Image 1 (cartoon, rainbow, N blue to C red):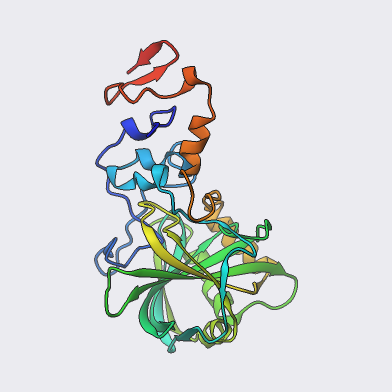
Image 2: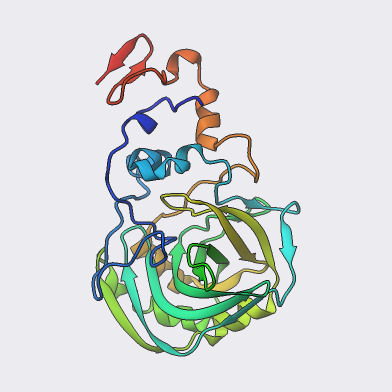
Length: 296
């Protein structure tokens, strides 16, 4: 397969990469109690989505995978009816932490998905939304990451699209983001006592959801991950959104090809380049060919 016309797949190194989408699951075990492991990937020009595949050998699917997320949700995407998802979130003490790549809430809960039970591990935020709905991008998106009770290696994500509003937000999300100034620095953590998330569970339980199989939207971009995107956006007061964005910044991966795709969007982009600008697969690791020259 054609390699990308940058250092892409030839400058791989052995850095371990923390996936915010899978943090706390079998894919990435949590750090010791009371510690937060800061992500080694980000959203900038060098450590961002166009170069994730170059950060670690684990991440090659970010550059060559063909069932990647996020995608545009349109009429071709299957929709599950209300009741397909059944979420239960008890009142509990939670931890709110800054991974550098996102902020996330570590908690416990269960969601029955099509009759199977999944354990909720954490939920985290993306600004703006990663998925689009009929081409429209929204201010934010929440990913609720689960592991199957009968097979912890199976990850499923319930996604909540967020619309900014001048009116009231979802109260439990407000309660979380009201604490965000305490974790403005990557690697910091704060305890939130007795958080009541019943409003989120009720919202999930009463709505249908778009369903497709894609990937983690952060490294290592593992494929075969089922997504369930709620059919209606939840409200977030614009002041609450601004507080979230002030800490998180931009942390959304660009859209991927429809599922299934013939090629990864990065590979497709490289194939569209003039031949002289493409990376020669025969060039040894540590070198990049540009035109008639090889650079070290």
